[in-house]
Image (cartoon, rainbow, N blue to C red; front, side):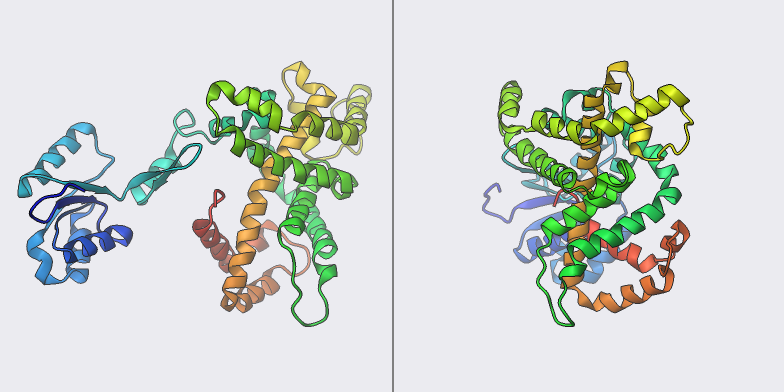
Amino acid sequence: MVAHSFPYIGRHAGSSSGFGLRIVQSALKRGDRVIATARSLEKLEDQLNKNVDPAFHDNLRLLQLDVTDGEKVLKIKAQEAANFWGQIDVLVNNAAFKIPLLDRWLIVVNGETLFKTLRDGRDDVLSSWDAMREVDHTLGGNMLEYPYHINIIRTTLNKNLPHMLPLIQDEAAHAWETHIGSKLRGQGWTPIEIEGPLKRIVCQIGGRCFIGLPFCRNEEYCKLTVEFTSNVMAAAGVINLFPRVLKPFVGSLFSKLSRHQAIMHRLIGPEIERRKKMYEESGVDYKDKPNDMLTWILESATPSFERETSMLALRVLNVNFMSIHSTYVFFAHAILNLAAHPEYLDVLREEVSTHLEGQWSLEDLDKCVQLDSFVKESLRVNGLGA
């Protein structure tokens, strides 16, 4: 803040609601002069008239401003703002700001316009996969160089959800009973450690879709995929503390990729070889061909060295990581939010009992609008990076 003998003059972007409105109110109460801006001047006037004491209006000026306008327009707007009182001492940008972390900047955006910009951003501008390169020393270089499994997840897996849903439901019931249901005692409260059981449940459900029975319930397979997920996140946190030139060296020290790949190769290598042999002997439409992620990866693997059994095993390991990390974080927050807000229990239980009795379908899930709303709100409050 610039010190003056008179109250400072602040220009504040995004002032019509939320944090912006509260900051305007606070600044005016301090005796500061404020230039409040928003995309909609009509909405801004309405909100400030309702929420700002008329006694402060002499120190308040309003300006229409959209931070996504071009540089030329923004320069004109900046001059308009300066003309109100001759200068601007402090600029508060409520639309977007960044917070310094140990290894990077955390960018926070606010407002519908910037949300839409993020949603509509092209892959060459905003790419979640490019962001994954921050952990490229923990996943294996080929995963980033040839990310064909991403398209499988986006297209083939989504198209096969009706086929997968009965398998997901069956495995979810089995995993829940094994890791949580069987530990509940009588009618009272039972303390449950959340991290281990939830990761195992997510692992089994994902494994049922990725490679099927009996692998998804194999103790060593599940332990490996959960351990790999935890190691990737922990190692990435350490590696990103170092300059780019040192990251390969630090990655070789902290990553357990080679050991994890070797174990996965040992566990599912024979199944991969069996399926390869069936392709060679009977063609792509051989009898009883599994309809799962491993099959789709086998059929999509390019270039040729990606069809090596060790590389396919690593690919399955990476797909498990993507599934376990994101789904566990969401699942854990949803359950904790539900525990913190038990008033929603009866409402959600009634909806689930009404629409999800017996075998589920995608249409049944679509009817659970309150469950969907609760899940979206949980994700809003606690995103995947929380």
